[in-house]
Amino acid sequence: MGDPTVVTASLIFIPLTIVIAMIVPGNQILPFGDLATIGFFVAMAVGIHKGNLFRTLISGSVIMFVTIWISNQTIGLHTILAQNAGQLKDGVTKVASLDQGGSPIIYILTQIFNTTNVMGLVVIAVLYLFCLIFTYGWYKNKKKEMMIADGTYESTNN
Image 1 (tube, rainbow, N blue to C red):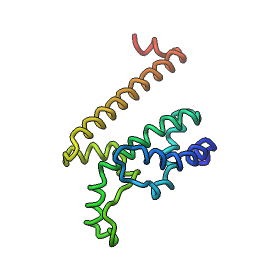
Image 2 (image 1 turned 180 degrees about the vertical axis):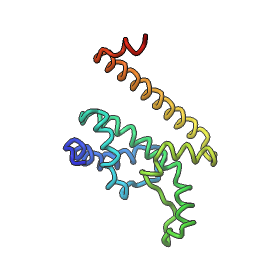
Image 3 (image 1 turned 90 degrees about the vertical axis):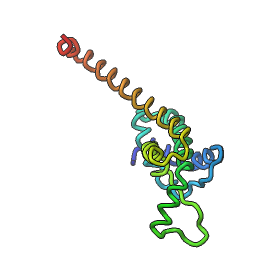
Image 4 (image 1 turned 90 degrees about the horizontal axis):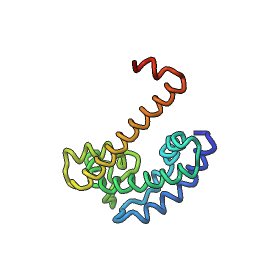
């Protein structure tokens, strides 16, 4: 995480995450505790975008919007977990997090067994499936391009 683009993107994302949280419809989360982990959210995006800060900020903003939206959907489950663990302090009524609470995989798995928001489950599952298919197709094309460049594509497909 010492890459200058990761550090720059992380520092830009701290206030940007708060702004995004203000525009997510129905948001109940103030992401102060999770701001320290922004670098971990951003590091992968910087690598994917090959150090392009602008692309990292655009894709990261979309991902952060979705993460905050998903986190709002899992507030009830996080609160129940905190209550069952005896970790709620007096006066605390809701618990949330962006790192685990905003994970699409965790959201899909919890909603399969706890269908409190079927439409949200469908939207996130379809979006996640689309991204998986797109990523697999991109990987196959890159692999084919590399094989063609190496001259090994013809010999393996005869």
